Image 1 (cartoon, rainbow, N blue to C red):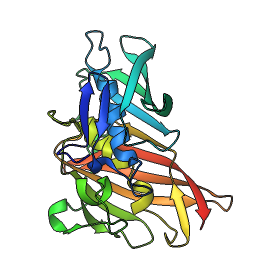
Image 2 (cartoon, one colour):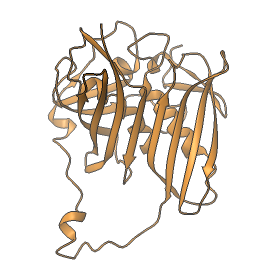
Image 3 (cartoon, rainbow, N blue to C red):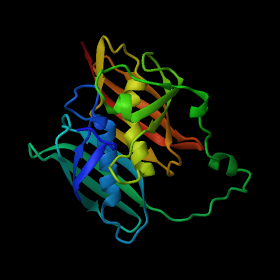
Image 4 (cartoon, helix red, strand yellow):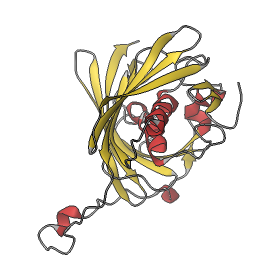
Length: 271
């Protein structure tokens, strides 16, 4: 199952995951990051209707553990339009013929709009929010959660500006994919961000991982511009309630500045 990418194409809508896509909960199940990236790719490949689209929102729902066996998907437009459209993707396990994850994407037409950057009242509010200190200011760290090759400990590089894998509390982490999402393809900006934001509930956790589990069954990304470069910055923290439900809240950056925001719902259980 080894390979130089997270997924290998079997046909135009079917892939097999490599060991680089595996997650921390089981070597037989995928990390949510590669799954989100794969669903983002399905959205990008879906019918464009001769329109330049920008994916402003992507919501991924992880319905059950996603296996390492072949996966296939189907994308449909549920709300057609020339300026705004909705696309839904269903990801299925070929072996079990059942849905394992879904995505819903909001696409907005990508077009030039003049902004009053020279207006003294508007310009300060239109300026791009700057990024945290860049990845060059920190050293790479490796997750020691598992002793097998996986997405979190092998396929990605992490450089923490604040916090760490082993600390409780808010964190700022720069994430970089070390391998392509799909063999033989260049990973897009959307795919890179979608692959990264699933880390939020782990890096920004507020509970001890020895005493609690905090699994996210979903992730939603809002973005207002495409990310540039290979690094995705996550300034993340989690919020928890006494009824076993939490939420991650993450500001998303590239090295030039703010890109968007991501949130996850979190199932919290005491071990």
